[in-house]
Image 1 (cartoon, rainbow, N blue to C red):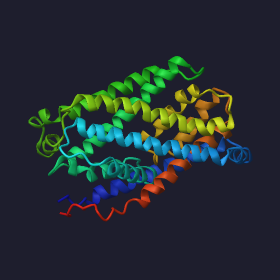
Image 2 (cartoon, helix red, strand yellow; image 1 turned 120 degrees about the vertical axis):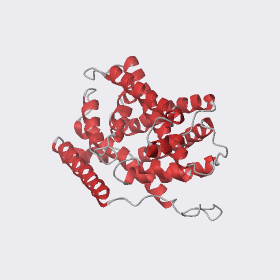
Image 3 (cartoon, rainbow, N blue to C red; image 1 turned 180 degrees about the vertical axis):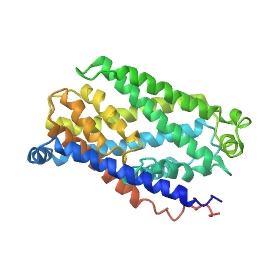
Image 4 (cartoon, rainbow, N blue to C red; image 1 turned 45 degrees about the vertical axis):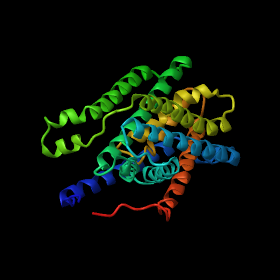
Length: 319
């Protein structure tokens, strides 16, 4: 049975939520202050509805790749009972709903981790959440690898320090995965509550599925770049795809910022700044970013509709 949050903890949570909303609103205000609303509206009208259809299709395929990565990680961490791909895909979409529609951008990860706890048997909630956390870390590592490689192949003038920050991020991601892998060894030296959490963390028992999951992270981030490029290319067809491979994943990394609501506002500012170096106006960059966000919100809404479990799925009894 989970502990009831104290009033002080609840107050901190509400304060943090308010801070996220305020920062997001201020970021959007700053972004909109830099554009002509008439030109922004014209940019929206220049994008065909076919671009939206393509972006949705690419993102839905990307969800499938992400589901495959999640399943590979469950296998890598020794889950004795792997859920079906169909069930994990549905849970992935449901988690996407929480990540996109709720402030913070990580609530869906907790939902997915807890929902998949049956894969590890009794008391598997900690392992399930840890695997989802590792999946997010691998996604960030894949993002940094894509950005770093694209910056080498197609450097963008005025965008400096990408390789250094990519290397730092990859090192931090590797450290986080290593810390999870060594959690059980560290449990004996940790205080009581932390020791119980560390003791429940999984260890990598099958390395090849883990390597496969890392490779799939490169695929998922490539699809993210492709989805963003769909809208940018609709406005600037002369821009090569490799440009978006260097820019879109970097701009989308704002979703990892805890001080914004899923990177909203900060993402648009990043699109403005980064694409301005290749001749894209603030209005066009903002329109592309908002249409990409609209695609995610639409698919997130689909995940919200899937929250009702199928009739043949047994629900774990509540404590």
